[in-house]
Structures are given as structure tokens and as C-alpha cells.
Length: 249
Figure 1 (cartoon, rainbow, N blue to C red):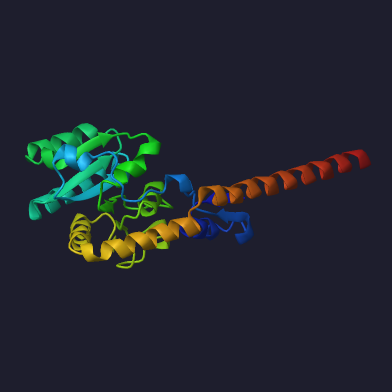
Figure 2 (cartoon, one colour; figure 1 turned 120 degrees about the vertical axis):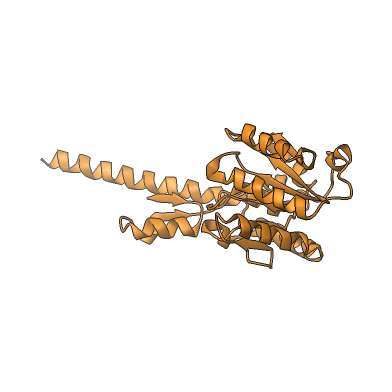
């Protein structure tokens, strides 16, 4: 058997021709419903940073090349230069942290970015509550946990038009999709999202409902347990069959 976190993975496994469809289990990891948050800003970061009159973009990806860390920073640099009232909140750490920090400092925009580093899991929703828009520069994803967390916190989202993202985001319905690994396309999609604040409340409600319906970890994890039980059942059945053959000999 094989297990994947989205239909895109299931299809790729199926193309290998090694397993029938019923042997490929597909389910999103999901998030715990207790991690859903409203827009209560209990951390008070906007006031602390003087961002009360700003629009805040949040990202929560590892600062690694595979997650598009520098593409994100370059794209957001274009955004803050175009729109002076935009601020960027980056959650996560990684090997590119020095490069990210050096990039924004060298361009005189460090005060418009807050590099929070690795944030405790239970505080991620509270950080998301400080933001208006979630943006990811990762060129491809399965069912991204940070995307589901952002959606569960009522944020509209901007993600690459690739992989599992298409299973969660419908363009201009609950977020925006852009051409993967294309900084210009990411800038354009983020700019369009920031200029469409009238759509944010409805998109946020839609995203919360999607997560409640399809990304409940307590429910989805049962599919994983069922897959393990099926494997164990077949394993035990095969062992009994082998033992019986040996006895017959």
C-alpha cells in the first residue's frame, strides 16, 4: 500500500503501475479543530510594531530553497516598494535565515519585515490572527499544513497553482493561484489579493468551512489507522497461509 496527502500524489503513484487504486490511500493530514482561531489579536503585534494601520502578509514556511524562501522575500520586497502600507510577518527558520535577513537589511526595508523564527505550534494561529493575507512561495505542495492552518484561521491565501494546492484553493473564490516558481506572477497575485480587501471576509469564512469539513485531523487520522489495520490483517493472513503450507509439507 501507499499513503499520500492529496489526490495529486495518488495520481503520481498510480502512474507507476505498481498498485491498484484501492491500495493507494489519500488523505490530508489536517489540523486539530482546537487550533482554529477567529481574528482576536491577543499577541498585539500590530501595536508593538506600529503596524496598526497596515495590511499584513504572513508566511509560515521553512527558510529553505525548496520552500521558495528567497522568491518570497524578493516578491514581498517588490510589494512593499509598490505599497508603502504593507508589512510582512515571516514565521519559520532554516539555513537561509542569514541570507533573508541580509537581503531586507541591505535594501533598507528591515523595519517592514518581522522574522519571527520558529514559532511554537500552539502559537501559530495567534500569529496568523495578526495578519490579513497568507502567502506561500513554495513551488509545489501536497496538502500543506501551514496553508490549512491559515485557512482555518479565516485568512484568504495566495499559493502556487500546482500539486495539492488546487484541491484546496479555487482561484478568486477563496484565494489566488499563480504560476509556480515565477516571482513576477507571485507579485501580481499578491498585489491583486491586497487590492481586493472587500473579498477577504467571505473568503475567510469559506476557508474556515473548508477546513472544518475536510481537514479535521481527528477524523482524517482514522483513515491512516484503517490503512495500518488493513496491512496488518493481510500480513497476518499471509503468515498463517505460509505456516499452513509448511505444515502440509
